[in-house]
Image (cartoon, rainbow, N blue to C red; front, side, top):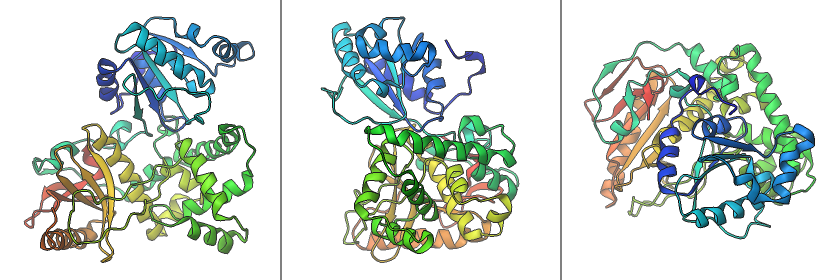
Length: 425
């Protein structure tokens, strides 16, 4: 075992892993490189096999290629780390799960989604998939967790003083990001980890489909995505942005190809549009809001420092929103909810929409400063009223997620205010 379980930092996804092991024969934990998939999977496993182990000239990979079924022998749950290096392992596990007819036999991890060539079966009903992300503020110990998002979405929290928040701390959380290896790294050195990550991604991208891509153009696209973080910018606009800022040309077909590669490497974590339960005459746009999997990558691509961020409140606001969206995704998925964004043709927007399993939905505005709380609350109430008048289903809960608030409470107009540094699942 690679993990000393006494030193394991608990993750929000732990509960889901335990649950799925009781329901399915195997669980596949997917997510970006370095987000902690192997440590979490090891924590829940009793034996391990590392496909990418370089020992003896990658002997494990050779063994898996020659006889995938052999690597499955061991105490269960058995961890198969980075299975996508040998895609045939997927079918071998699916077959073995059927043969054993037992739950909780295997845990797979994957930091990229391989092409489907060579994979014969989806694994539906046998192998469940869980998406893991970088550490939330609650997981890293930077949120005290006085308020549960699940309780909040059920309109059930008690007002509480949470204490003052230093803007410099929020800036550090954004620059540092949530990769486990960066949590205790001095902020002046954290950018080195993010830069190294980007270099590794560009190298690994060449192997996703066995094709050679233009790394320089991939980097230009990543920088354009960073400049457009937390926006609904189109592929055509990305191409125009690269031309205007970097004076280079990338056609939209190439952009679409590279975006697909980045998606399959879990580098991007976009926000889907919401419209399912509005059911009104209000027309809703269907554009995804673009996000990197971690704010530290945006900061590295844009060469941002604490001083630059504090002096550019517009960029800081977009990145603070991205930080909050990551945490809201982690927390909401832990209780079966789904996170979206809302953008109407009437120019009204909601930063985050959380749809609950019972069909109710909650609306969240995200603001860095407490001076914007009134404006955000007014916007939420306006959207609530317009949807109601149009015969739609309004949000059951409205909330402003704030950076600089020193308390969590419900305003007289019914809108909650909760600091991101006081939130948990």
